Amino acid sequence: MSRSFSFRSSGCCQRSITARVAVQAIAGVALVVLQTAFTGEASAGLAGNFVYNNLSESNAPVIGDRINSGGRGMADSFTAGANANLKTAVFGLVPQNNTTGNLASALFNVTGSSDANYALGSQVGTSATFHVSDIPNLGIYTSVDLTDLNWSLVSGQKYAVGLYTSTGWNNPDGSGGGIAWMVGAGVGANLVRFNNWDVYYPAAWENWGQDPQNGFSVGLATSTVSANVPEIDPATGSSALSLVAGVLAMIEQRRRRRGATAPLSA
Image (cartoon, rainbow, N blue to C red; front, side, top):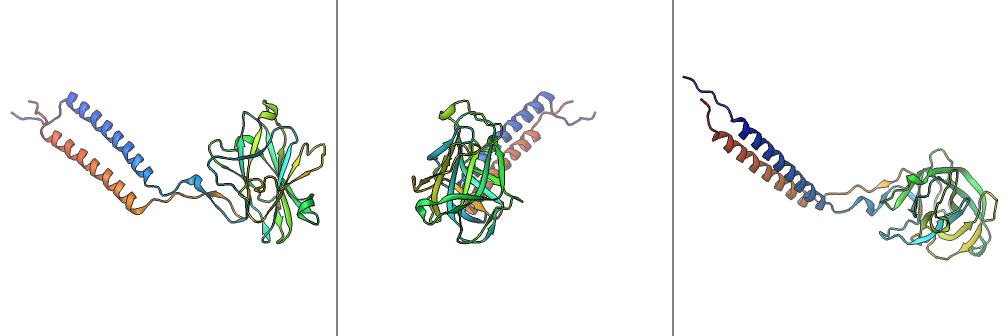
């Protein structure tokens, strides 16, 4: 008489289900442990070759003003510290409601004999257009591609980055909604800010001066800008992986012991 070695079907299925649940639970623990091993977060800063950086780092955005009506425009002016061909513009923008449509951004010469009477001059290069849905709901920054738009800076010259409504604009809340432009960091190159009630009228750009002195949150870079990659502390990361490996080994040992003591069928 021979004997065949096999698990009872009910026990096998039960152990299989239990093992899967255990592995899922450990995977969740591993994810939490590894997340706590990060020494920084992606939203903490930006990586790129900035030639002008007036971006606010605040996690609680301070609203400078808002673009809330058709043709409404604003601008932040600065002094260029180096010759540069720009590839990316970065804005600190905060959607206020269900506004839809496009925004446009342009680079202008800033003319005038003193800080008190700077005025927007001729446009440099071509306007960049992006949809309001491109503004991240949970992030601080909005990056706009300037490739082939010929946004060029000359060291020592004064410029302004304008932002205004474009095609398909619809703000259902009127003056109470729109897209808010955050207050900037107030870097030394910052000059004055401007407002335009209707860039398509055309209305004149109004010099709003140093009020607030920080200007608007905007950055210009000669490279593609991305969020900084989070780093893992080697000691914490190794401890987390060791913990996960140990628990998985314990599960495997239990599975083998249960297999070895399984009843035999005649």
